[in-house]
Length: 250
Image 1: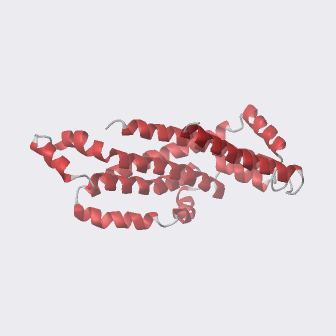
Image 2: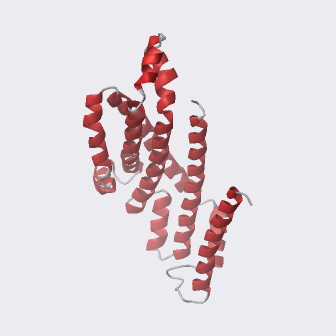
Image 3: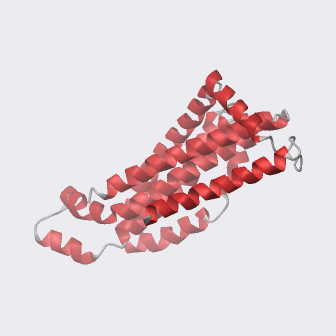
């Protein structure tokens, strides 16, 4: 068996062990169904949710929030990051400043976002854009500011300047680092928006989780939790593939 097959085997074994333990503690009554539903009950609830289509509206809301927030963070993060990287002085000033702010748990500012934008999509977009901005801007600064100056001098000596220098030298060299920041920013954007929806919202996947939790509908709550995990896995896989394709642009 090759390494890839061995990795898949260990991954399958890991999840099988988790579900096996889940089935064991719930079927024997060791853990009450109030806290953890039995797997057959959860499976029926999940199938019922998919068939009913009740997930469509909250998924649309969440994806809209993620899309808007991520577009804002990409635009602002890459633009500001590139401008900062053009000067060693500005890099020395802003890179540690952005890093220090990024170290703060920015979720603590969510009540402020709700105060300004309300419980609707605006507060979630503000939170997601803010959280995802920092890994994007930091990686953009790092990607452009740490380029080997030999590349720039060689291209300039051959007459490359302006946009041509950016397109042929700067961007290809910095792209792998920037793409990593974009991937991390997307993951944090999705996580922060789901978190914001669970803290205070009118719709969305996180809102559904809290709604079922407050209704003591444990099966419904876990159904939406699993649904969010599946959506997160799909989105992360897509972003990883886009990152790999982008890396081939070099």
